[in-house]
Amino acid sequence: MSTAAAPAQPAGLPASPLVITAVVMLGSFMTILDSTIANVALPHMQPSLNAAADSVTWVLTSYIVATAVATPLTGWLAARIGRRSLFLWSVAGFTITSVMCGLAGSLTEMVIWRMLQGAAGAFLAPLGQAYVLDVWPPAKHGPAMAWWGVGVMVGPILGPVVGGWLTDSFDWRWVFLINLPFGLICFAWATAVLPEPALPQRRFDLIGFAMLALGMAALQLALDRGQQLDWLESWEVRIEFGLAIAGLWAFGVHALATPGAIVDRQLLTDRNAMTGMLFITMVGFLLVATTALLPTMVQTMFGYPVVAAGELMMPRGIGMMIAMMSAGQLLGRGVDPRLMLGVGFTLTGAALWGMSLFSPQQDAWPFMSTGFVQGLGLGLIFVPLNTVAFASLPMALRTDASAIFMLLRNIGGSIGISVAVALLERQTQVSHADLGSGITPFSQPWADPAALAAAGLGGVVAVLDGTVSKQAVMIAYIDVFRAMSVMALAMLLLLPILKRPKPAPPVHLPE
Image (tube, rainbow, N blue to C red; front, top):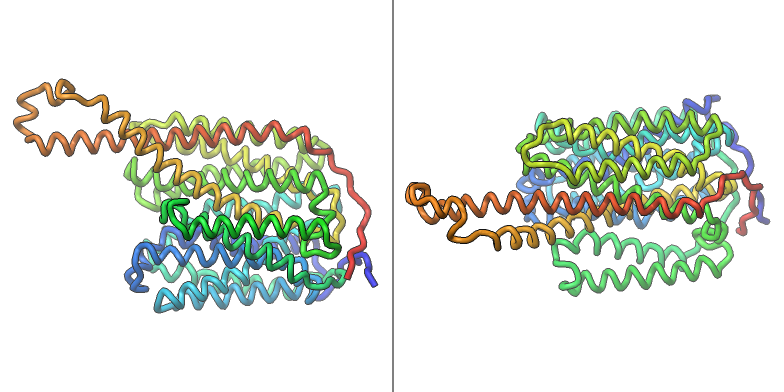
């Protein structure tokens, strides 16, 4: 018989909501940090693992695909074995597989352990969000989500910084081994303090999971390998996109028509939840795309070393933390979350527009100031967004909703990287052709016989091509940032769809 979710019952030592928030925040932070921490270590892994440049990227792809496939199982597994038990198993599995990644001696071993690491850690962030929403009363959801959100949003920013420092100072293997002490602390802490909510039992929706897993895995593969294989010029990418569309379409039809599907119908028909999913996808897009573009730009265009490049990204994380703390307080005082979302997207769009004004001759200040403003904007988006999207959902659906939100944030990040990199390369080629067409035999230094004689024809051509290429890349970055700014500001048009949240009564879920 179906039953409503009962209040959480203690399974260890009595703990305050703040302590529970801290422990689940640590677990979430570890996994989200690991989604980007290995990026800068890939060139160092390549000789150690005897891997080619195009195959070593499977270290990243395997983690992303495994996370996408495993995340939708969070709700069913939490109901099946218990939310607390699933959290503990996930921390243990993530810690063990992290150590095995650090000890891997071949690319095959690394890919297998990274896949298992992604699958084990996929549950921690959605479980953490569900715990935070359950242990705090609705009036405190804003401040609580602010604290938890710091780990979720700042993790992708700190990943390349921490990864670069560990690789430069020690060895690339410490990018993974560093998880061992934190995993042990998190496991012991969670064992002592996490409660075990009584959740209704659910049957396993094999068809729904298969369709969703197929769609998500195919989409992630297409996004990750598309740039390398020239997108739709490759039959592999065409097939992957086709499988993604078919799988996700079939899953949507199945979920709406089938009671007890892996994602409940109430979640898919809740206006605030669905609009929030669109917003969180865009947040992932803007956050991860900027995280991918800026460090590369400051290193290649401005000559900053990897650690210094990471330090230039720190003001964004600081702005994000300040905004999240402020957003939590404002929500606690009754400020309309839709107003805060509007301010957040406006600040994000303004910061990205400021990035489109970058110049090759600038100093560090524009990077830091625009990053800080973007952090403020994203921080003002994340906290009220979660409050609006989850307020009308009953506790029994929060784990499912949290899993879908984390999945869509990751999908948004993958789309953001793919679109940004593809647009950057395309605009670089276009700008190079436009700038090159303006160079004639009468242009300087061609018109200066002395300079031409001193450098030689080949030297002059090389200098000109290098100058044109650098300017073309800079123009391409400007175009990408400007396009992202327009996308952020366009999200303001969707704000009227959101309703001011009102808590809903619990719902009965079928077995």
